Image 1: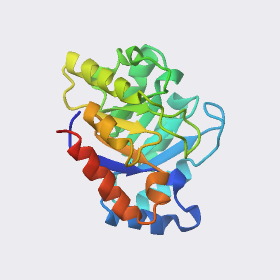
Image 2: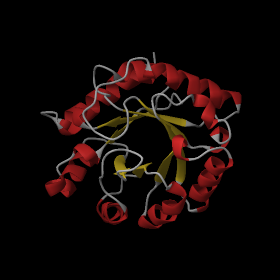
Image 3: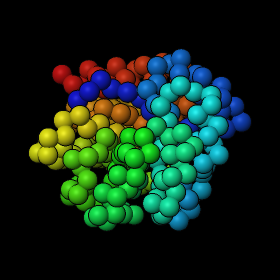
Image 4: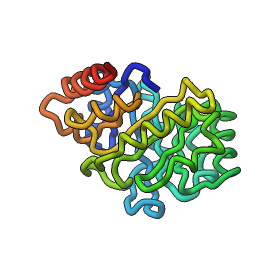
Length: 227
């Protein structure tokens, strides 16, 4: 919360025929993470990439792999992605309730990765209660997960502020807050002012005329919004 802004370009919007070149480009542009969207066609209506891709990404970049599991059975697959080299693993609160959410966080930590829980736009922050004291990051979705290129859902920054309050209440001052969906130069300031630290950008980076410049501009705007 309120840490220096880091940009996590989502490779869902990258050129998969030239993915290594795109990874090199965002490294040189100052990206803080590589955001990897894993979709199973069940939890969300889309299929993307999986374990083999994470293994290959681990070989070509030193940036931390921020792996977002939009899947219906995370407990079964967490060991696969840990072994593949994910540095941070995000599970969705909508797929795990109560003690199972706590169990997922424990499994991630035992595997040596950082643990994150994601919230869909209509999911209340209260579902984080069992695990928030032990989390490394919370991902606030500012679009419905499943497809890139969607517009920011107005008011998502209010949920960011709610997560800040929850984390402070349990003493988790080091919690990172990530926001994903429709974030670019026109929206980054409001989420960072509310407490977001990690900004997922898809088209705002990879579809820009100057992707490296876009990373630097979005990061600068986010940091300036801290006041």
